[in-house]
Amino acid sequence: MGSDVLVLAEHAEGELAESTFELIGKARELASAWGGQTHVAVLGAPRAAGALGGADVVHVVDHPAVSVYSPEAYERCMLSVLEHVQPKLLLLGTTTPGMDLGAALSVLWDAPLAAYAVGLVAEGDAAVATCQIYGGKLMAEVVLESERSIATVIGGSFPPSPGRSGGAGSTCTDEPPDLGDLRTVVRGVKVPEATGVDITAADILVSVGRGIQSRDNLTLVEELAGALGVPLSASRPIIDQGWLPKAHQVGKSGQKVKPRAYLAFGISGAPEHLEGMRDAELIVACNTDAGAPIFDVAHYGTTIDLFDLLPELSARLGG
Amino acid sequence: MKLIVAMRQLPDLVEELELDSSGKDIDREYLTFVSNEWDEQALEEALLLKEATGAEVCVVALDEPDVDSTLYTALAKGADRAVKLTGIPEGWMSTHDRAAILSAWLAEQSYDLIMTGVQAADDLDGQLAAIVAARLGLPHAAVVVRVDAKDGVAVVSQELGGGTAVEAEIRLPAVLGVQTARQPPRYAPITRIRQAMNAGGLEEAPAAVTPGVRPGLRRLFPPQRSGQAEMLEGAPADVAERIIDILRSKGLIDAGA
Image (cartoon, rainbow over all chains, first blue to last red; front, side):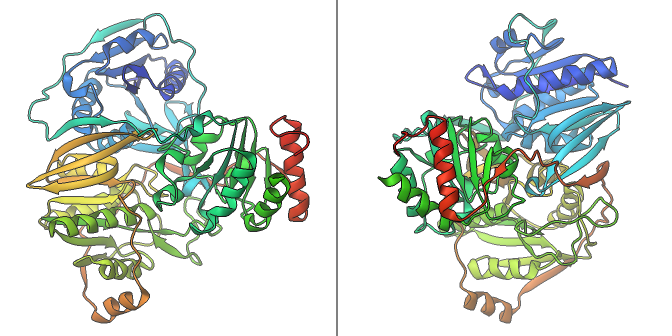
């Protein structure tokens, strides 16, 4: 039975994702507990292998079909790497590739999957994952004890591995599997349009969520943002409703922000949102639900209704 | 072109969730169930595709609490068919079991595109779209934010995070996990939902698979509150003062503000 841990590296334009280093750090810890090695698969970015000093073995699969992420080509390559490495555990991010591949490979590679993991420890031969469920309102402890398993990990759950320079222990270039007759073909990559709003550059963000209830009520947060002279940001429901443009979105599918102060109004704090703002220096959250997960990352909180608090703040800051 | 939208029910997360006596599931007795918000996005994108291409939209869901309301609402919004798969046990079900039940039903259907929400609040063992696709041997994509389809090919925008998206052509049939439709889900007036209910037209089919896949779930538990937030109490005016003091003490606003 294998005792190795395999990580899929994620990259964009040759840059490795921060989450990849977090997974490698955890993979090293687990592999060492099981007496195995840390393997990293890099698909389509051979030069990125040079920054993977934390890995014992890096497997590079290079082919034009994987230069940009595409589920079908990645899936075939990962199946071939898995066949070759036979790891005990495959670690992926809770990212677009992780959601595609984790779920599909759990069928195709026949391995149980624990999704949305925020904790992962070795318990004898097993891995025990602590996973978020019901939007982070509960946690689930999942025991992965079969000889092969998969965990998809939420970004920011583990400290990143320090090894970023120097080569890995060894690097091998794996022959790509048959990538002919793919049914999925990438036509291009679209980067977000510049809108003049850069919420990542702001010192203070006034951020709004579902609790604001209607588009008309946005004037309340707009007034506060205006009084402070800072941009407005928002969680996903506000963007999905079309109340604010995409450039204002904080979270996994929006922007990761790290302002000096993040003022959150009516945001409950879904895991995908917290991922995008938990590193703010100061977080002040206003939500009527005292049990909202946003209060786990906030420094200061209040359960006062935002409709009562916002006018008071704006009146004092409006000058 | 035939589109199938797989929808499902979930506990309304606005409510307090309590554990049952097993400690492995939530106590469902007094919970309200609502449709998965991402499935509503998938339905909206499917209805937009129908408007653009004349495709037929069929909605399918497992018989879970209050599912009739979700299915009739889908019909009121413009879905052509709604199918309820019956014989579903109560309680939490793994995505692998859901996928097995849906795949068995899908095997009897004709379709070009299967759409569902990118994720669900309790899909602890993975997201539905890719699991169904892997079982059926179909191409798939998660976190889809736009779908156009014609002549056996879907053009799909798949978001990679930070607003970057890959545009890909996928040969149909395929399975898509939709994150966001290109416009907010439409509203169905209650009168039209009632009309749909009065007209009946909900099809039923027995689930052909007995669930049995349990990931090694040991227990559910409330997250350890890090308790780091210092709660500010008092009247709105007092709390506003405190927040301004905090911002001022960090040098984030002028002392005079």
